Length: 209
Length: 209
Image 1 (tube, one colour):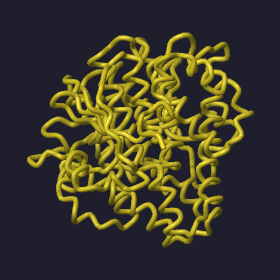
Image 2: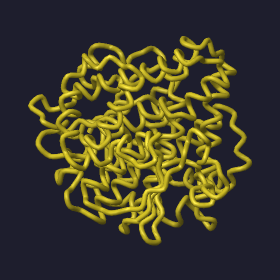
Image 3: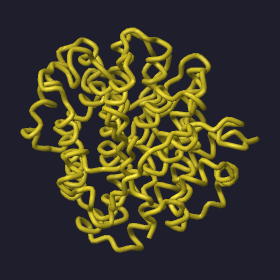
């Protein structure tokens, strides 16, 4: 398997966690978003959308982090990242999508750059923009989380946890006040104790700089 | 079943299509986003996130349109909205997520209002913002679509088609030039011939105004 990603991209980070939880070996290929490597013609031939992450598993090529993780969960089912019960699966997917659809898109580097080029936003403005959507989404997640922990929905690690840890990492980068989100902060701390989450963190990647 | 939605919300529109394709009856409850009905305390008790759509199926309550549709597909499997093969499922989910994660969040009413309140964007500015992300995402989808049609990935209607038609509807509202996206426009036209897509369209909803 080959994973094209970027060490600080939260959606790449999600896929690294899922691969590590399942004990799957892969070759990591770094796409440096700060230097627009995602727009290199060579990369666009592999992924016409010019985004990360992208997973290649034999003759299967998949973009979009949640699609990649659902694929991994179907083809390499242990440990499962979704519960067996449809309503419990729905709750986990809902939480994952609050992060993937309502938070992360607004903190994407391309989006922040566009705020600057189109509306003249400065660094403080783009930071406040990203922080606004993080706080709104985290409030929704905090209302959904299981009060007893240790993880978002109890004792099993799910797709929602796989999305939570990278987004908390990102929230800290943007200086978001996490004090209203006690359950999320506690789940994040418990998850980061796990080897798979530790191996997947941005600073543990070889290309970090 | 009860579906809380808004006639013009593209994510509500996706769920209406899925329900209609599966022949599931439901009570539609309109949440008028233009008048901030999603922030009414009575609605927030039902959905703390204050978003639409929200599906109630017996004692199961689900937010986030893709989580709702995957739940429907698991509990009411005919007709299936995802193929059986994991790599084909991944391709369909990838396409759906290009719309749900890379396009729709940037055209959300709350996001456009925030561009105005935070950066002083005028109507032309917010229209251009939404159109920019639609064009980028549609270019990626066009590169993925099956050239022979009639739908995005061949003869079976999938979750990707369920997301495509509302997004094309929305693109037309924003005046996006669709001429570079011939496969998407053709798939949209073919899909709108189907009764389920016709019944789900915004102008066919009772509360339209």
